[in-house]
Length: 265
Image 1 (cartoon, rainbow, N blue to C red):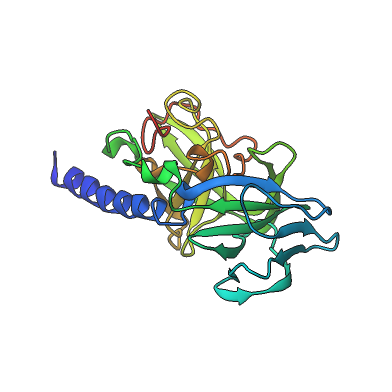
Image 2 (cartoon, rainbow, N blue to C red):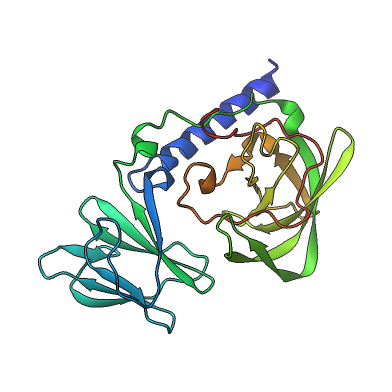
């Protein structure tokens, strides 16, 4: 390999090692063991202590048993507790022993997502399969910002749910001489995020698409699109996630044989 390729692979290795460590944290995405949707009838779920119900006014009510130690975001919880998760955001964490019950809101639906460090998906995790890292998948591009952010509503892997985002503009680049144009949303650390499908989706990569983080554009709008870092969403690893689907039209017209493959392949 050339020095450039050596650097590309070394940087990718470091990035992916961090990503796999994050996936495998005790209460990370690999720890999910259940997803339960609530209604206004107080009920118990799986082997979770207490009863849970929606309140009809944007909240969830948990009744903690007198003889059980539970916490809410790390603070002791007793009696009747009201929880108010925010739509589309990480949920409120209720602790019970080694487990965490994440109380989430998705549009007008409320659910419990159980996170257990002993989940087989976590204890049996050996890494995320991926394609070889290649320079050809690092594509120069440009970001064309909208005059104003636009509301964006997409479907979810759970039928009937939707996700709401802001579309900031479009990332434009080429693959093998063919122009690609993807709607971009806010990413991590002031950058951009694109959620897309391509010709490999449902074949060698997850059918619900992959996510790519892109560093913030330069002053002239130029960006670097490194498809080697196309990453699976949580729903590729577990049936208990509620991931968004890609925006309509966010499809790369070729098979992007770069980045992460479907887990288990």
